[in-house]
Image 1 (cartoon, rainbow, N blue to C red):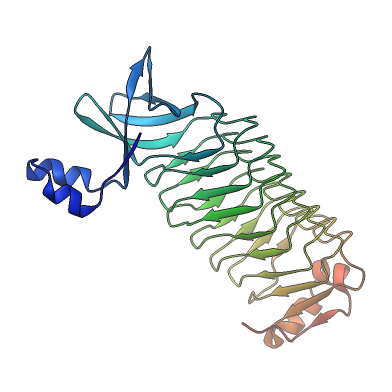
Image 2: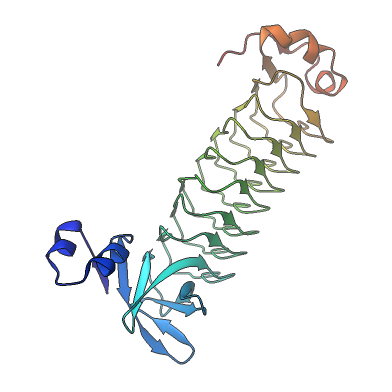
Length: 291
């Protein structure tokens, strides 16, 4: 059972000051019991390492809504929840929403992949890494909130095939988007990319057929092979960079006919004379991009 611990409750308890300071770090602490080598709070299963850090292993039984705790309480200890195990929730048919615990640093490979009814996910600012294919083929996933802060990359295939995902804000601090990260997100129509993003990987947004425009931030250096290929509605690309990016093969193949590249007026000549960009856009490179 989840225990919400507001400050007013904490200060009224007869505990020593050191314990109060420790408990106040956590929004939610769940009491757990040991079951074999694992621990459970009745909803989730956990492992605990020698440093008294917990990893979420998966569900005890089919559950629609998961709200991971910040920490666990067992045997008088407070145990921080720091990771979601690889494939922990993979293929869970009943899972509809998930809120990752606010002390979790790592969401490992395929942690939530192929959850056919997952519709929403909240990822806190504590997360440093999201593993390969973490949410691949969650075809009903509509909303993802990534707070960012510690995260520096969206890994390979993380949201591949999330066909109901409509909008994504890649948080500040992310410098790379991996291979196929958002490929075949066919409902994706609104993408916000952060200043400081340096690379967009191979096929990162390929097959995003609802994407009509995209704004590339000024720090972007490299766009990988087929990054925006088969984005059939993509008619306007706003490139805010100071110099043309390095382009891989087929970056903008099979996008909207007559698609326009908008760049800053100051750099129009640089883009117009760049062989790679000219091969895709020809005379449809215009100097009207504004911040």
